[in-house]
Image (cartoon, rainbow over all chains, first blue to last red; front, side, top):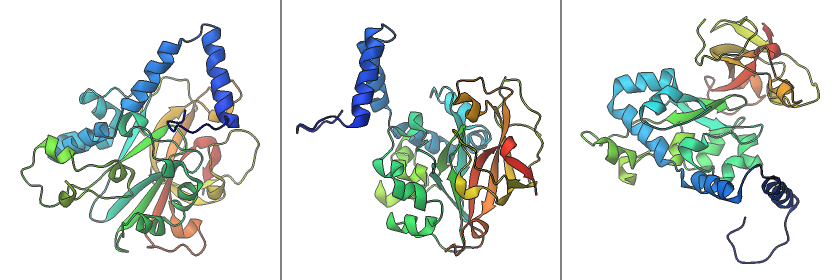
Length: 199
Length: 105
């Protein structure tokens, strides 16, 4: 539902969603309260969850190994419940930059990064990120040197992806909580990199 | 070869090893297909074996999707996929593809 105050008639999909929801409630399959609770929970999840995971991997090399081997189990270690999510974490290094896209629809690790930004679901991003990633990243203000390999991950099936960015220089001695403040949503999608100046 | 994620479904036996070269079938069946058009017919390399998952083409028809299909991440060179790709030779795109869409290359 739109949060704006201006009246507009329902679009086709809004009408379909409302009809289906009301039908499910009418038939007693779900209650309004359950739907509201689920929506509230969806909105409450934010990229801070993913940032906690990244910050832990920056300070704990053994944790990082486990995270790269099995992202789902490593998140559960931190008490993040990510049911049914097969999380693949891809690591940025001085020679590799990773970025995530779903060309088929808009698959996204919502439980770790929250609701996806509109651009992630746009046809422009989905079609161009896979065939001209360097141009798209430059539009986000991120210029990747030709000596760095770009790996684009097309999230087409059962896996979900998160980028593990490189720990910024100038953060020696920072604790996990402070490091986590540097980790943005976009840096975990791979269209930005964190910097100490930004925190 | 060890799957990254263990699943409990009855499954088709995995055919491919990490590093093996594979070609994506060039086919255009109707239905709910999770193999993107742009990669059909291209040759890549198995990056990892993800595990076995119910076939989404069957799930979309309200069937069980079993036996589950082995799912791989396949790595393709961008220069092989896109004519006139602008970027480094080393750039790659990695895509999850089910075994029934792959053949040895």
